[in-house]
View 1 (cartoon, rainbow, N blue to C red):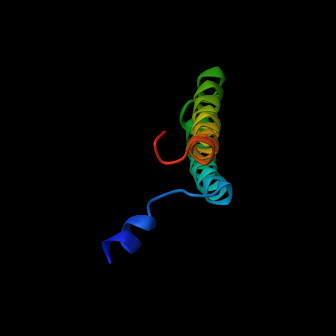
View 2 (cartoon, rainbow, N blue to C red):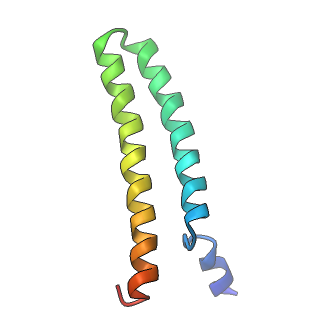
Length: 76
């Protein structure tokens, strides 16, 4: 029972990683748009880029971790 429950929180495939990255990106863009309204000008644009940049780094890290896991197995 607990194995099936725990499986819900484990990212096994690249497709799952892409879905999570898409969800993160959707939230980051919404937050970035709020920043553009609250902080007009260069500051808002900089915060918008920081939000979306964090999603790019997180997505790359998830995909990289999946590739390492496939290459080296459970031990890595």
